[in-house]
Image 1: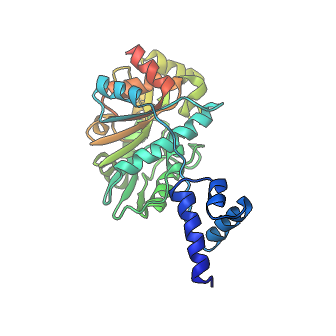
Image 2: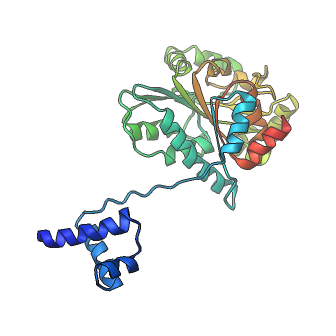
Length: 314
């Protein structure tokens, strides 16, 4: 046990270093010792548990671009990260950090959160810090079998564990072989009940799939062929949320794949009070703009390249 005199010495050094912002050289002159002694005292105080270090990973956003998006499209809020990273996956990871902080701001106790799957949502969930939300439930907006999505189908469970909440999943694959089979599955009592619960969510978190073949979630997971994907583009699809494809105005397309997907209806998604849409990169400009114009999302988390392109394109 350190004597009180030594504790007082260490406390003084901590005060000068952490609270007054002085460097070790200045402190050494003030207390008449060497710089190495100050360094040892700081370490000693740390080892004694007198210092609590909290590491935060700040990601600066661009308020001016965010305000332009918010004002132009009547969004509830917008967050724009400077486009960074050497690869698309680096950008998605960075954006996930921002989206996790945004989600934390909106996520209250006793909240029913609905969420999709995909790379951006996975990045957001993994970046989310443990934060208990009493009485919270996490319900997935779409079905998904383990083999369907390489980005992970257990995101609801992962987030539920972080907030000490309950995860609810739709007991069905995401994409079924025919519209008839899908209709039968969606009329199943358990599936129907969970979809109705998802459509009544207080808060939503979604990613948007692009029609660019090199970055398409559905194509990457080999749920459809390239030929089928190209036909969707010809039909006017600019993006998809939970497998439901929509046009440039955010209207759900009357196409076969939308009748084969076990997921929330986009018309119901619009009625959820707050839906956070996370989209990274220039490849997500069309799906992001369509989702915004269609009112499918009202809180946007994106990067500066995508934000500028959206403002110019619209």
